[in-house]
Image (tube, rainbow, N blue to C red):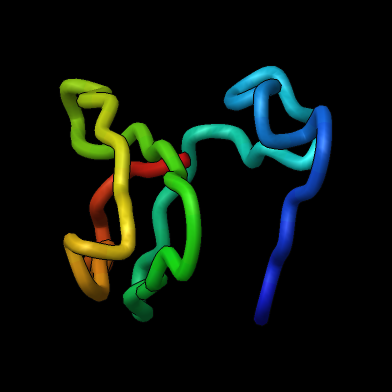
Length: 68
């Protein structure tokens, strides 16, 4: 799946209507790569916030790791 956010959506972060709730996957991992700008994630049982940029490469969220 490819998602592109433009304009005001770039500044809404977690309050954006398409922002998913904190959840986890039992049998699959989720990977993404930031091509431009940055994207934030909340992950782990301690709900750690982190920002991702193109320089950080591919990020994988493993099964059983809570994230949004």
